[in-house]
Image 1: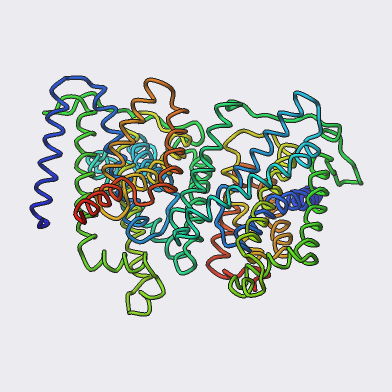
Image 2: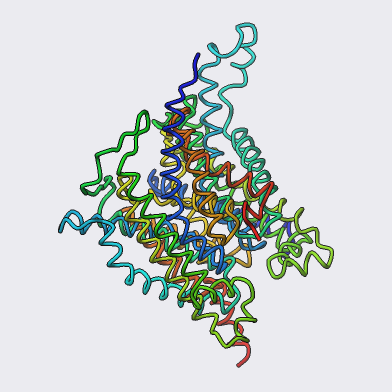
Length: 334
Length: 291
């Protein structure tokens, strides 16, 4: 399938999903739906680096929180313009602030992308394990910075007021959901494009044998940096609207381990080799989580994810997509 | 403004004591990551598990935490060999340790944390022992026994490990497996068996470190996460797999953290290890005593 056609199809699917969800007029559908769609972005972003390149990022929560906290910082700045900016300039700032959410998404993406690039630049020249460890430590450090930075609420957290309505759409939550749906389409289209481009073949070469790739003239470091930057930027973009969704952002919720675990578990359970895996993994696992959170408890739900992750990496290393492919191949051979 | 020297001296000494304890925490990682090349990021989970088991026996039967973990260390050893066996069959044999092996350990870390959360709750837990509370005083220097006992214990543990690795046949085989697995096979020693023993040992050491941890500070299930950055920073700074290097690096990190906490506030301390880790990776990835 050609790229423009696939993009069109993805957009149509997104529009259908949105239209269908509006029919029952239940606001909770959007609350739950937003989380799932947000994880589609996160797991697809993780997979660009993890699945295609073979480099594990444990710091999804850090990149996500960076996006969220850029929003908080800008929103706080917008509220305090009169105190922070010289009086002569204040009217101009009032024209721009509060920034619209799409702009915040772009800013969140840029900030996270830069941090992704920096972390990659320092550690990717070494063995793969070092990058994984550095990302793991990155979330602890960024959380420390945020806790000590009073401007964005420190350890107590910050409130971000969500407007009640969005003109022409109904509730503001639906607007946020629509934006996140757009991001999901963007990341899936990007992932599929990478898969079929020279970039993707380069990534696959790195994943299969980095030394051989380097020897054959693949610019491994540059490609790895592209992957970390893209992946980090997408995670930051997913995080940027989050403060408006949750209304109150504390370091504990922004840096929650469940972001790191889910964005690893979802692609690994779905399948890491193509764009469909993370989407399938997210929809299955995300729905399961929503159900268990409501019916049992949120602690049991995270436990479930951990157990499923371990079970899948041991029993079905290629995820659900891999299982289906094997089944198809076996049938063809008969 | 005159510089508070007694504060500095106390910070350095507290850092050295803390560093001794960090050495015990990192010893297991030095074996598994440094020597066996197994990136066990789930290591801190076993430390916390040790802490909670020590807590359980301390509260219910008033047994000393260190005694509990010493007695139970064979159980942890067996647990470690079991985990290595699963790891070997599912990942190392298939050559998938880099992505799925890491995810496996991450899953273990996560599951252990949530299980402890479900069983014990989110409250901080602490133990009771005669040496928790009193301090020794030498002039301006305070030596809290709460820090001194774990530090001394760690140093003993460290010495024993060093002896084991340097002097016994199995210990030397562990060193050999870290250098050339094939050559070891040609010497008619089974590298998988050696690795299994070493990994089991690393988990047993983790349990003991857990006992020290709960003596030093109250523990809750997610404390382990703070130690991930720390143990890997020490392990990398020390030079992967070098026992003396690990000890020096642990002391160094302990002192830097303690000084940071004293002069800038304890909430900044977690950032120190990451800074050390990044700087080491950027400027001297082989570490202080790297091969």
